[in-house]
Image (tube, rainbow, N blue to C red; front, side, top):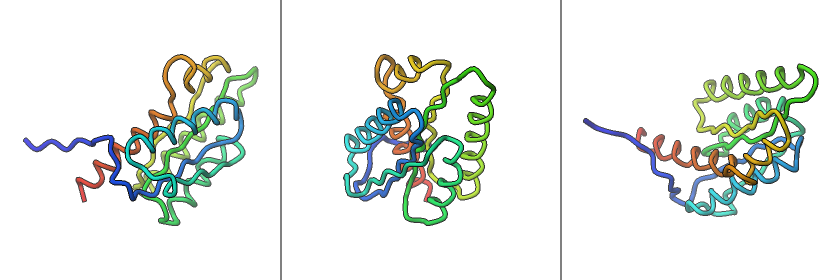
Length: 155
C-alpha cells in the first residue's frame, strides 16, 4: 500500500501569504506571530512571506479570492478571531466567513489553512493565541506547510 503523508518542512522557496483580520487585534497579532514562527522554524524565508490584513473576518473570503486568483502565492494561512458578544452577529460572521473561505478554497483548489478562532470570550481567544493552550496561528501555518508537501507529492 502506498501512503502519501505530508511532512512539516518547507523547501525554502514557497511564497506564503498570511491573511488576517485586524478586528480583535490583541488576539490576531499573536496568531500572526505564531504563524510566522512556524513558517520560519520549518524552513521558510521571511522575504517569501507576505502579511495581508483586512478589517474583519467577514472580509476574509473576498480577499482570499483575490489572492488565489493572482497565482502569486503557493499557499494562504487564513487567521482571525471572532468573539461572541450579546447579539447574533457572532453567528452570522462566523458562519459566513467559514462558508466563504471554504467556497473560495474549492473554487481554486488552493492550499489554504483555516486558523479563525471562534470563542465565547476574549479569555478563550487569548488562551488559543498562545497564552495557555498553544498558538492556533502556529498550528494553522504548520497545517498549511504539511498540505503543501502533500500537494507536491501528488503533482
